[in-house]
Image 1 (tube, rainbow, N blue to C red):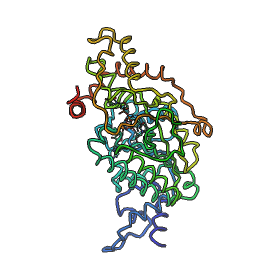
Image 2 (image 1 turned 180 degrees about the vertical axis):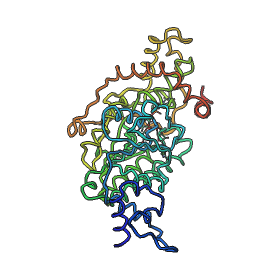
Image 3 (image 1 turned 90 degrees about the vertical axis):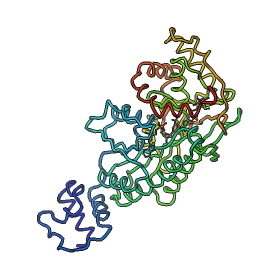
Image 4 (image 1 turned 45 degrees about the horizontal axis):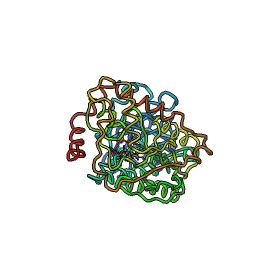
Length: 415
Ligand code: NAD
Ligand code: DAU
């Protein structure tokens, strides 16, 4: 019996206990000969044991989420726990953007577990994959704010490019060792952005799955690089990947460095509303729960190797968004210090390299997977404003310390 057969038979007989057992105890299982004293075990011993275990036991009813403590990831987990059956393991580094308070309502749920860690920590990712044996990975973890990528691109390359590469490598190793039926069923969903396609002119057709990549910011370039790696892992290794490219999301739990929560919080506190440039840059807005449903649909029914464009089919110039928020606040907070709130609008220096317009053609996901947004902008934005006004504790928790430093750095010379 060679080492792999020995490990597999041990695991089969002893079940999961052996799988998570301390390094050599598998060799001391009752009924098996212990390792003779002074035996030198091969350096890849644990890897062989784990690979044999994976092959012997197959996948668990569990999905691994990366970046699940961020804005979209936490909305995804909350929706998943309410509407799906499989267990969730959330791997998140807890950067400034990660917030476990978002997940308080599920933190002691028997089907949910959190693991703090970096997607670039290959030993950790390997251990998690081999121990937990997920049937899918849904990859949200990223540095996600364009303005931060302009101030300091390093973290964007580290996490979005190198981190995704590490995750892909470990996913490939894990997937390669699975039994054939599980290899077929496994999925790696890569959550990406419309920004990889660059910028549209006013009359250009919307981005679609065949639009050429033309990223313009360090953020979008790092996401584009990760998309290319994901694509290559399918083409070269046949890893069953799917990529989603989505437009701007809004909704609960979004870190208030992004346009909509920033404007709601500043306006409700009587602070200036910093609109970049002429305020006529256009974004396509989607309520976050609809994005989460789209990702679940792609995970369940998408064709591997494909990409899917997702959007709200709701293009709006930034100034119109800000004015809409101000009108809602006039209605909901008529006693604020500055009313009408739009008196707080302040035009500031434009974002360097600011993309002018994004728009998404969502016909493929509608046609193939029958996904359509449920929320209208009018209903979604009202819910969102109310949510921020009603969650003062959450707001206080995320707007202390490093948030203040960021605001000072980004807007100090302008406001
Ligand atoms: P976010 O910044 O709110 O959250 C990112 C999460 O990833 C945080 O919890 C953070 O702690 C975690 N993280 C960062 N680096 C990590 C690392 N090295 N290892 C493990 N965890 C790490 O981002 P978001 O807005 O929720 O976006 C999630 C994903 O969706 C990103 O990949 C982003 O590119 C993509 N996306 C976002 C939008 C949007 O409008 N926000 C639209 C389309 C696509
Ligand atoms: O399009 C999808 C992308 O949407 C995601 O991939 C990114 O992760 C996400 O951050 C978002 O990127 P944007 O740069 O479009 O989002 P942001 O909220 O930063 O800005 C939206 C628009 O509002 C943009 O045109 C810049 C403008 N803006 C933003 C801020 C923060 C302002 O005018 N003033 C501001 O203070």
